[in-house]
Image (cartoon, rainbow, N blue to C red; front, side):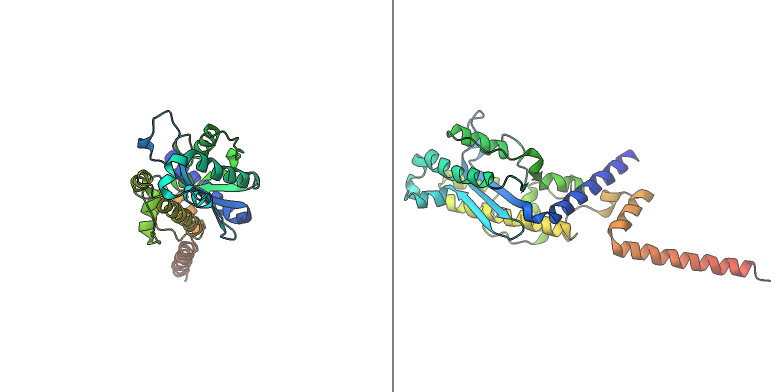
Length: 270
């Protein structure tokens, strides 16, 4: 029973979190980034960053900070990017952190950006290595949508590689989308524009996931039973969130009350 209560509590908190994001959408930014493959660097080294994409959730405007566009601005040909990587990376990270500094009150919706291996701290560390001083994003303003979905739908709501699996489940546009292995291979091959396009696509997908979830239209592998459980409390919470089910229960209640009234009326009619 306690596990059911905890599951329902987590679901309700996550649902509230999604609604809070929608209600303050003018302060919401969606971020995703791509980097060097984790297997291509020493354990003690932070992977080099290839692209960062930030989308304004309210107006849809998107900003990119990437190695390929920076190389183009600096007139560095693709064949010379690797030998100039650090200086080019430093330049676009300068731009990214200037943007972060301009948005201190915003909330940053992300997907699994939660540690030094991959996340805000990894970007900060890479910038420090290159000689920069990062403008820190408040931890309370970093909202991991993947984690919110784990609480909303349950941890097994979709198969692994969830960012891509959700796109497949919902038949969302997957053009230019690369998985982790493909991005690592593209980095090794110097296909930085390809990586940038994949990052853009992932930001668009995160945006779609958030909107569809808020409207209860996101398809997952989770059943109603897995979310609410077959308990009176679970059924009650389900009815509160779903007007169709609430209407069905109301109609059933009216029918039962009518039948009981008719039976009592016959029993006590002389």
